[in-house]
Length: 234
Image 1 (spheres, rainbow, N blue to C red):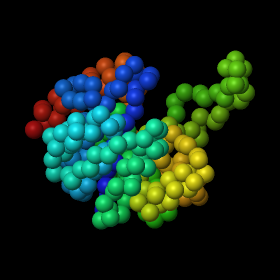
Image 2: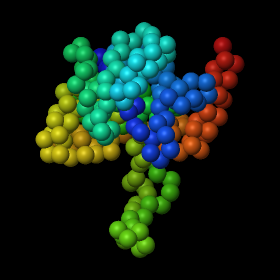
Image 3: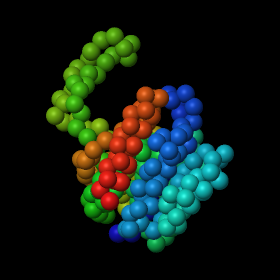
Image 4: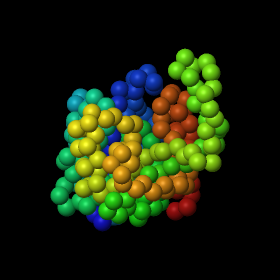
């Protein structure tokens, strides 16, 4: 299938303390790391980036610099992540059969994991990069004081991005969610909601989301180490 990459980079960074998609991390704007990774995938020809209105021209420049081979469209995001993904999905070229949606605040995604996710997609079947949960998870009462129950850790995985689906399936899922005024925190939840299957693709390494300032420092250290390894291998 012919895939289009979608990068969602329209958040306000409330928990980070400021808009974070263009902060410097290891010598690049945060979102530019994922954009650069997607630009190196020979399977891709198209990318859509959803960002805040004030950042449209900035992301056009980032795409031209870090993924010059790709035909990129930059569109305005929405009030929520789901709305931003929907705005981007509407502009995916007709030549694309499938998409993957990635958070611009996850700079450590690897080409190998993207390819693994793409290979898992089929009509009626989506995919998500994920990792097994290592902590014991408690369901807590609404007052935040009492444990209601303990979940079986063996059944729990933490969903990451990219998340993958055919264009037809994901558009149908978003249309149903918009009709029913349903909001989810990720894309495959919308696929699940309309009865489609979702395959878990285990992440091969670090792929965390930069949410707090300490995450930025951790990401910088890992990206600098990865860059040194790449240079040494040449």
